[in-house]
Image (tube, rainbow, N blue to C red; front, side):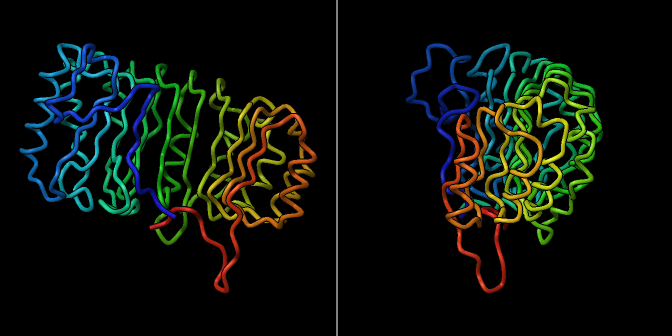
Amino acid sequence: MGIYEHVDEFAGLPVVAADDEEATVADAAAVAWRISMEEFEAPPEEFEAAFEQLLQRTGPAGPTALIVGEWGSAYDTPFPYQLLIDNAARLSGLRALFIGELTGEECEISWIDQGDITALLEAFPALERLWIRGAEDLQLRPVHHEGLRELVFQSGGLPADVVRAVAASDLPNLTHLELWLGVDQYGGDARADDLAPILAGRSLPALTYLGLRNAEIAEELAAAVAAAPIVARVTDLDLSLGVLGDAGAETLLAGQPLTHLRRLNLSHHFMSTETAQRVVDELPGVEVDVSDPQKEEEWGRYTAVAE
C-alpha cells in the first residue's frame, strides 16, 4: 500500500490547482490552493515564479490554505522554507499548510526531502494546521506556538529527534497530533520512550486526537498506551496502518478503560479474526475500526507505508 491519490479537500476546503486558469474562484480564501511543478526536476526559479503567481492570484493576505506538491527535485532538494518565511507578510492569512503532498508515483514518501521546519513555525504564529509528508533530513527544534491546532507528520520513517522535539514543544492549543512513525529501515528510529512527555500527559494539554500510525513498533506502543495517562483525556486513539497483532490488542484491552473513547482506529492490522471481534465486542460504545486485516508474510509484518 502507498499513497496514490492527491487530496481533494484540505482544512475543510476544496482543492484548486493554482495553475488552473479556467477555475472560477469567487473567494480566494474559500479554497485550498495547490501548487506543484509538472517536471520533477524543475529549477528553483520556476517554483518561485509559480509561487509569485499564486500570491498575485490570492490577494494581499495570500491563501488561507496552501498545499505544495512537487517543488522541483523533491527527492534530493529540501523544500525552500525560506521562500515562505521571506514572504510571511504577504501570507498573513495563511492558516493551513501541507508540504510534500506527493503520490508514490511522483516521489516515494521516504525520498521526500524536507529540512528544518522550526523557523517556519516561528514565522507563522497564526498557523493552525501543518501537515508534512516525507521525513528525509526533517528537523525540528522544540518550539512555542499558540496557534497550532493540528500537526501531522506522514512518513515511512520519522526520526526520533523530531518525535522528541514535538514532545518537548509548548503547543497549548494543539488538539490533533498524528505521527506516522514508520520503520527503522527508512529512518523511523523512535521508541515509545521518546513519546513519554506526551503519553504522561505532561505536554499538549488540549489534545483530543492522538495518532501513532504506520508504526513498526505498534506492539510496543500498545503496551505504552495501555497505561498512558494521556489516553484518559483523548477522544480519538489511532494506532492504524501499523503491525498490531493479537498480543498488542490484548495488552490494550487489559490496560486502562477505553470505553470513554469516541473512536479507536486499528485498521491495517495483523490480529486474528477472533481477537479483532473481541476488541469490538468489549468496547460497545466506541466506534472501533478493525478493517483491512493483513496476513503475516514469512519474513514478518509490514506497515502500510514504508518506502
